[in-house]
Length: 218
Length: 419
Image (cartoon, rainbow over all chains, first blue to last red; front, side, top):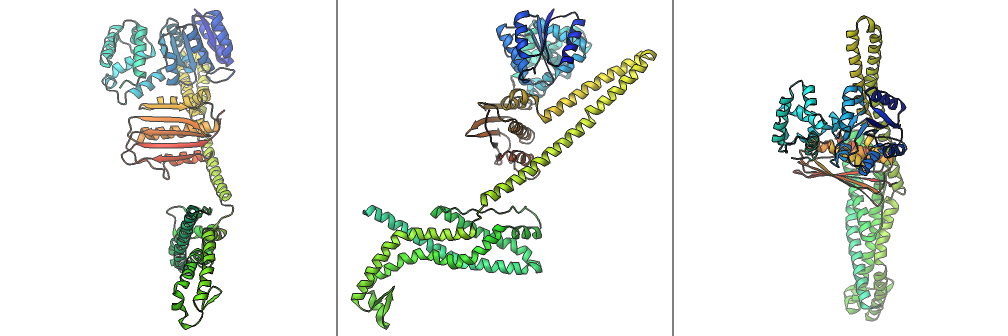
């Protein structure tokens, strides 16, 4: 699997290259600025891009803008955005096109190599990887006066949280140490309570949940 | 001169005469009374009673002077500037008395009192005299002279009235005076206010006020930034720094245990990693408090949008900023909005918030409205007072409209240019 990596700090870029290579990824390009990233994305046609939000030359949200532009040029181009901080605002912009293949994680998540690599693979496959912080913010905001959310059991809430992060039923089952069947039961309960249409497609399911949480549905 | 003109002029003259007459009637008793009260109060300060009465009397003097300043502006467009020192609320009589006595404007007020009931009185009365005197003169030829000359010669100005002929002469003089009066009466009233201004006006009023405001806001700004630095130092010291020390120690132990006790080494490694995650989390919070990353990356509009998304209740944000606000103003505005939003979310009992940001005529105007219970006030110790201070550094102002029952609207204005 070919990866384009954009990160301006040498230590982090080097670390990420080593990590991804150790897990069998092929680094198509490792760049350090916005214009280079745009060029690399156009030229090397990667399976997934791992991009830092803040890049030179402006040191603002250059990386995010490049990634969004690249996705406009090539819809569904899998992009995993890394940042020192997560903002719902950015998550919303990334998810706006509804094409999937979006990841948005805190840089700290790299510490857990297994989970990080899992997230990269998920995004490359057109799935979603949302940082737990984004999800907990969304839930905190939603549950203030959202009655459907309030009706979820604590277990269902946990499942919803993991589902919103983009985990598959198998992934959720492994995380919560329950059977996949139990997870499937929870998810159908959740969809029932929130009034969402049940979908077999994992990806569609995640986007529906995220849209629900983000819409301020209440 | 046509009759229209004439009538307008007559009306203005009459108005000025009446206004002057009223002023004169008020000036005399009030001016005298307040001067006497002031002197008595001052004399009683050593006895203690004066400490209680002086602030009251001086406040009265101030009110009297305020009325005159207002009338000067309203009636004749004469602007009289005054700057009083702030007397802190709820202080003891001693401080109140001496703060007021230490204020040069107070002394200007007091000095004005004797001038006002002498020269001021005369100059206020003059328009009325000038206008009503010819009325008397005009009546002389029509028989009034008979009533006056019973005991000998009656002098109308410099005309000795002894019979019908001289009475007609007096009448002619009265006509001349009337003409002059109609022309100059309003100017005379203006002259009165000019006299008041000469005594009452604080020549450098605006400058003095500006210096006072700048001194105050500078002190606040320095205090705030010093407090911020102290907080950051403490947070780093107790947070990230301590965690890094702990990590270093754990890693040292791991090195030693690696061969002897791999299981425990693994435990310590896990702990070191947790510590690094926590340290990062703390640094992130700290950075957010110093200069939020979204603000650096996206500017004020999106930073406020991101802020609104973090609120536990829905907030609508409308932004109309054609450029980027200067970094220091941007930061101050961001934290001010943050504080107001937090207040609204916490205390107002609102279930919806509207934020509006726009820039017009060199002013960044931000309004935050909530549909909560209202009753918010800018008071000592409230978050709003803190915001006011922060904005003050940039000559920004804050206004709160929060009637009981809501809604609450907080408006902030900061002069700035967009880049």
